[in-house]
Length: 366
Image (cartoon, rainbow, N blue to C red; front, side, top):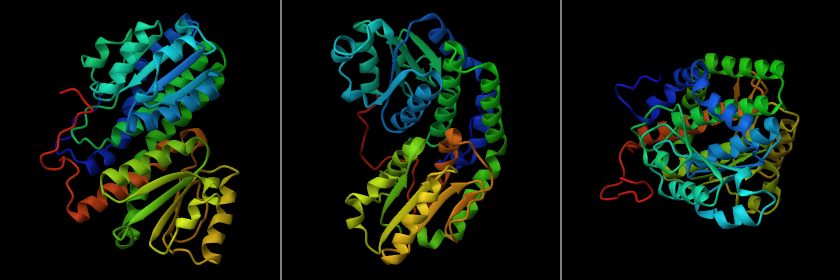
């Protein structure tokens, strides 16, 4: 399991990401075996992942993969938007055909625990996905499955986020294998892709860190930003928005790439930062049109592209040398935003390990 850090900090947890991902690959049967059993033995027709903050962002990714690999109706939702009566009575499925997974790293999220309790009451099968196997959420679920994030003593979760993504990727593959929508050869190939990413992740952290250093003075002038992407990286835009807001205290907003055409671009000015998250896929070519538009209209010079496979998008781009399959790219694409948030806070003297003075959290059970 993950070794606890001697001097935990947001930046230290980011730097420990490779170790954490390799741990997940080594111990993946801990969480894939229970899900193989669930999908192999039960007639599950719909899966609902619920979580807040980082857990919700990860759930967007996991449900996308469940639809891709297991060919099953899957949805991510904030806990407060779930009505178990509608879920069980007004949908296309019986309650017993619905799997509700509550994602909570600490196992203490009040609203997520509440959804699991209510969903179980109406007859849905419920799973708590958590790092703390004796936490409150495990008392409410039909089954508890270990989320191998390790304990993060900094409330701004970064290592936990990428761990949840990788675990979700492996769970979706396991579900597909159990159902029969993924054959053994495809399963083995995609497992190999994940192992390669985990093995090379330390080098990718170093690349993102060096990119930050190259543009450090500019990043310290960040005031407000847009994060634009497409496809499976919708979770990356959400996570980048969350981390930049809650740490460096500057407004950020995530957008689907083409939504920038429909209104938001009118709000741009010379102080705005725009980050294009462009994993290696045919749609990455479309980013060039946006970059041309920024240049032609002289909007702002603060334009950055995050991509993979050595693609060239100019001097401000971070082009990871590793070619990563699109389905795994969110694990990598979020790295620069975690590092910007962490290192900007270090430079600004903001301690991300401490809550603001005299402010408690009522989102979690104490």
